[in-house]
Length: 154
Image (tube, rainbow, N blue to C red):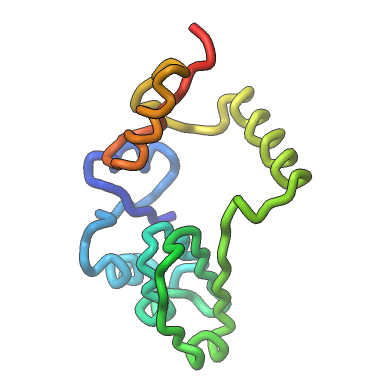
């Protein structure tokens, strides 16, 4: 698996199972990924919001998928010919579209992973419930190296 991250997070990402970690800020990220996967990437999960579909499609394997989960206001030029001649899929994902049953199933699965310690996460800091507003500000400002946990008690 190839992942991108800030250089300070490379060891953490490798510990999660990435074979190769590339700097997410490098201007040639798409080309760098393509150089590591001769047959092309099976899945490209775009959390950047940049929607560089025209550049991404050549880096995908035939029947590859681009999963988009960021970039609410972004617009992209779609290389239609490259999509259908290579059977490439572009899918969006927003958890806010999930219904109550789906969210309940996801919560149960996450709780199981947390209980068995199979879900790996990193905590940047913990704050009491009274500082929930500060927790939101920290997340929105970015630059964290882990989650901000808000304690309900104690």
